[in-house]
Image 1 (cartoon, helix red, strand yellow):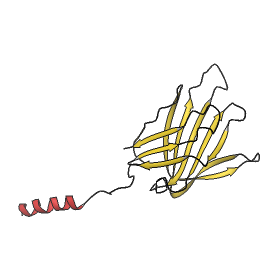
Image 2 (cartoon, rainbow, N blue to C red; image 1 turned 90 degrees about the horizontal axis):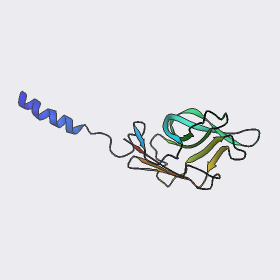
Image 3 (cartoon, rainbow, N blue to C red; image 1 turned 180 degrees about the vertical axis):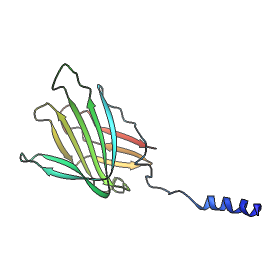
Image 4 (tube, rainbow, N blue to C red; image 1 turned 60 degrees about the vertical axis):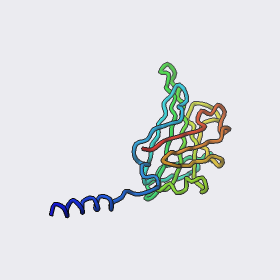
Length: 166
């Protein structure tokens, strides 16, 4: 009986295999590999089962809200400048948002995907949300790479973003 158990146990263990391919660790831990601009902090979030609801305000400016959507995912990378407490309006942030599906199937470099670039600051003509046409977002070997155009705004800080998933 013990011999039979010793034969069956390895067969069962090798018969059960993990999922092959794909990006199975996307909602798990991650490491920001791109350099964060000076004088600030960078963060990355994965919002699973969320999508973007794109709207336009009364001034014809684009903005978005997050909404529940099964099978969708929103990836958010943000830079926040460290505030100087001596100045009330000393805030500045840049945020890149990518909408995709939970399998990241449209981040192969071939399909279309929504990328938004948002600037929040006390700066005339610069603040706002921009829908990017020329930006790219790809994932390969559990490494997300987002390449932004360098001329979205003057003195733009975020250009290339790389995040590795474990």
